[in-house]
Amino acid sequence: LLGSACLAGDGFAQPAAPKAQAPVLVTSCGQSPGPLKITVFLKRLGIEHEYKADANDKDVAGRKLKTLIVVTGASLKGMGAAGVSMKDELARTAALIDAAKKAGVLVIGAHIEGMARRAQGAEAGDNSDEQSIDAVCPKAQALVVRKDGDADGRFTVIAKKQNIPMIAFEKNLEIEGVMKSLFAR
Image 1 (cartoon, rainbow, N blue to C red):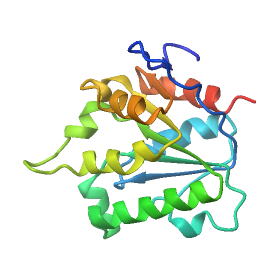
Image 2 (cartoon, one colour):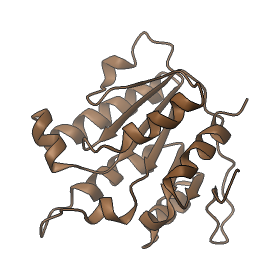
Image 3 (cartoon, rainbow, N blue to C red):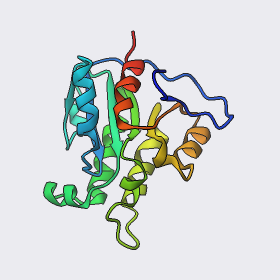
């Protein structure tokens, strides 16, 4: 892959990353701003996509959707503005991923805001970011993870346990190279 983005190593053999195709639906599990960062790079690359904060199973039905990118990370502010709870987000995301898998849509789990997203503004006992990760990553067919977000090995453990290819990158500017390699024809 391009730049310093690479398949996460740690000495474990992992499957090759699947080839993603357009059109793409981008959303989050937790109403974080992360999906908007991904859409910037998809637009630059000319990859047909749609961002929908409240994407659900009905957004998959009857469409020629090929790839679903679900960004993990909960924003209590974002959920408050959308009038949804973490429980609502987890249910919406589960139904969306199930519908995508049934329709043969590639599911990519992404964590692009690093460790700051996992700890940012979290009050004692708030594990909404971790719930978001648990809802998406083990069900994904590929993971895209900013390395500092995996400082504790959380994503590497999921990738190994579920045999999911994980593409790690250092800086958000490398997302473009990661997307370019995933969508290479």
